Image (cartoon, rainbow, N blue to C red; front, top):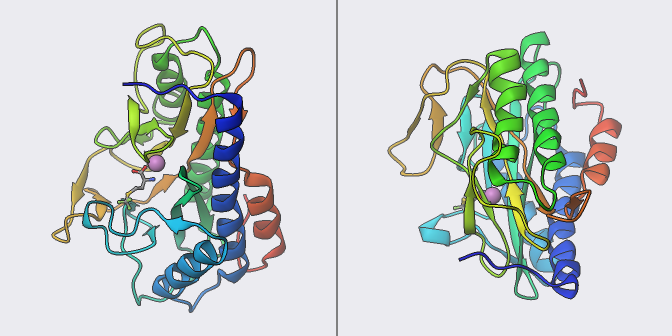
Length: 265
Ligand code: MF3
Ligand code: CO
């Protein structure tokens, strides 16, 4: 069942989404070679709680951390751990909060130093594909228009692998609401988009083949070919004429551009 949100509810969801953005911007300042991702996860948990919110991933179906931190060939749902970040790593940080009963859930991929041309392009194109999808999140379009736009820009244009096993989703009082939103599909198909539908749009794009597997920990998703994967996610409200992006990359990008340890392509 799809839940459409009122304007008042959208403003509450914007607060939740922006708290995630602020968390990611705070973490962006800390990123450098030599730190471990468990340290980042602890910072994420504290920051969220300090802002009168709950880290929504913790204990979600038994998930044991505040955030998902996915490095290089880890696609999503990576466990924060003691491994130190290195020059050339790419790192997707996915954060969720519950603020006053509403969920925010979004993600950003950072490059620790220069990952090289090929991977830098994958990062850039995956982010572009997210915005191509968002452009389609307007009243009267169909869900498949979003999926198609993401697939066109990544798989068709660049030959990247679009992960099939994981999808975007509706967002609201629950982290995962209907509808599911694949990152591949046909335009003109699927449900018609109506005003007030909030979607977490989240392309997961592989440099190599699309195939992935789940590690023995039951969570960590990796590419089968061991090549890197990139993940960006925004929380978006469907509106007439132009989608309303509830999360805010501008503060993350500002922190990213000021941090000399991060590569901005
Ligand atoms: N952003 C992811 C999603 O939408 C993260 C949730 S996984 C969790 O599915 F288990 F850590 F919560
Ligand atoms: Co999500």
